Picture (cartoon, helix red, strand yellow):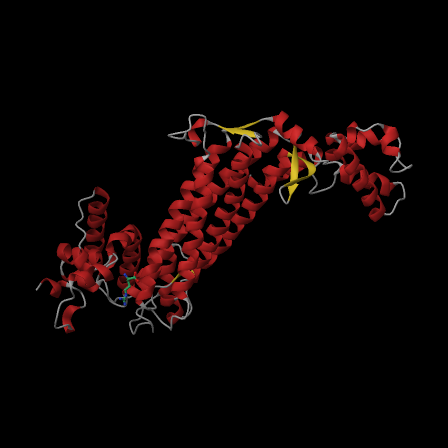
Length: 460
Ligand code: ARG
């Protein structure tokens, strides 16, 4: 009976149905963990030998067998079998086929429960180490674009209504800040990912004289998980990673939404180079911002994976439950989607062409310097609330005339307040408004340039 091949089939009297086999197997997706599984097995075997739990000959055979398996997998020659459930049992079975009894000794003082937790942590650590530099590359691309646009005026929005003039460079640097926190979050998450579960065995530890510190050191972990029940069961480190990933995607989805708006003919603030867009099969005039739209869409998928993992973990009793096998697909997809998104987004930054005139005239349309007029009056002694009211009336007047505040005659402006003198016009220009916000965190081009310098240092 084929089923008797299973590592655990000894006490079972009937085989599982094909459907149950397919339902419970994970090899189709967890084979992705193979290289980490082999890495973990090698370190475990070395420790078993160092502690005299297996012989030096057994270790040599195991190591040789594992390298053969590694090459088979890399070369595509390895035959994965769904009957053998998962990556761990597939590799173990092959090891036994290659090296015989030594292979049967590898699983001494170990369970698939601590084995799989170790594999995922190794996978995730590697992924984080790949993702952080990609975030930095995206930050660099933002810096490059911001540097070209420290003096470019655009409307700053609140409620998607023109609010105050801001520098495009300042706007872009807002995303730099978000990504900076995102990278910090992943660096922090890595500390908790990088702990060794091996040694926890099935749940309670093992009666063999193991040396967990040695295994941790061989695998580059910062330490060991201190409680065996916790080590095999919790997936909080993966949840934390997915939460950080969801935030990165959320940040990029905000930016995407803006790029989509900015590209629309009603805004025409930017153009995106053709390789990130597609046309319509029916409307010949269309150029659709597919990449930003998909980033926005894929954010939903990444948020979904976070919720999937939280729900998976919720109310699980200690210790390991098979529920946890479901952690892999959401985690893998999160890593893959995030990596692709960051690479494509970074590249896309170099394809953004800015239409200065459209940004400028949109800023002119929204009475963006109204606050500046109010501040001008307040600086001359009028209480701010009264200034606010004066300016509201002036705006109403300009609106009726169909012009901007800066287009009004001095005599017109003076009908709203006697405090207004001819120095008002420098205050009402877009550049004047922008330049006056000259403190750390403000939009004045001087400050934006300083922020860019600090940002460069933070990346160095
Ligand atoms: N494939 C399993 C997983 O991904 C490995 C652990 C299986 N442990 C068990 N007790 N059945 O979680």
